[in-house]
Length: 488
Ligand code: UD1
Ligand code: MG
Image (spheres, rainbow, N blue to C red):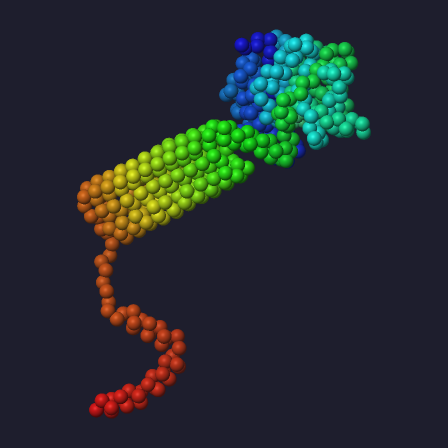
């Protein structure tokens, strides 16, 4: 059921100074997505009428990422802190009674946790409900000061902690549910009493609690959900958690992952039962892998679609390509975008493919480049075959039929057709079409010159050491005479 009285505000205007980056903080990636995208995805199932994203620093880059997802953009310029960001969003919130506020830099939060937070807020008729977590190392976070039981009296930022408060390890996630009519008066009283001269949303909590309003704290089921990304170390930690969650999901789907901590999988990747993923594999983008496949060590697949029983031998790179059932590639194969390898095709070591179709059962096993090429079924492409698809200006196609035999070390100068059942002689440079069942041969004729090599060796030896050669000639003379006389 969509909640009509609830709006969502995502704070994404900050610079992220601690990341030391030219890229806005919320556009940094963890677990295969930008931080802000993770937050928006967690919010989407709540189906609220309005989601407002506050942008500011690098707004021109952040806005195009969130706008297509149907969010309303509010510009905070300049950025005077989290409290100021909410004030800027006020008009856009219209007549919403409650606001779920999230920072754009806490991407691990889950939908269920947000639903529970809103439910607790409603049930407690609270002015504010804060999502909190207990961390072994709470440094960097605002700390929760509890009044009694579930009630909170203040959030104290790290820089303002007293010696005693440093012991507190319950932290503010910056994810809150507010009853707006009780938030606005408190926010109006917040002063920029900190070294950055900013209006802190956290200061509104003490003001509300001081007026006797109910401020609740709800502990996140999994403390990791509260983690924010202010530094590169935070980003790495959050990325690690996302990757763990994704691998756990694949293991749960019946996929074997060897040394799972070395395998990197993007969120939209899927793999079928009994597929085996060896150590140090990366599965990226929208890669989909069928059942009983083996992805061997060191291979990187991005936006690849694999059928069933496919083997990717070690150290292959596959981008935006389709490999049908029982295809085997590698080791050391490189598939650039837009290839289609049909059932049972085999591509071996040091073979590069681009925009090419390889027919059923066809082989290209060694040291080959196939670009803009269509090959039929059961064709053998010999070692060192190169399609010359580019003349420096344009790309041209090569079409090779069924049951063709391309001899080793052939260059096929496109545009070119080699008909069904044809042969190309090894070492040929083919520039004209080869008709079906014909032999295409285009190489210099062989001539054997007898004794040529032996003479060459003698000449080299003489040139390298003329004295020695002369001496040995002198010495050998009398012997030759002696031999001659003997013969006489
Ligand atoms: C904030 C909280 C802290 C909490 C932590 C959790 C404050 C003052 N502190 O600290 O209690 O433990 O989050 O991660 O709120 N932003 C704007 N406009 C601004 C400033 C910030 O939109 O003017 C956005 C940022 O883009 C970010 C979010 O608000 O997404 C939080 O700001 P950040 O600077 O990360 O606050 P923290 O120091 O992490
Ligand atoms: Mg932060």
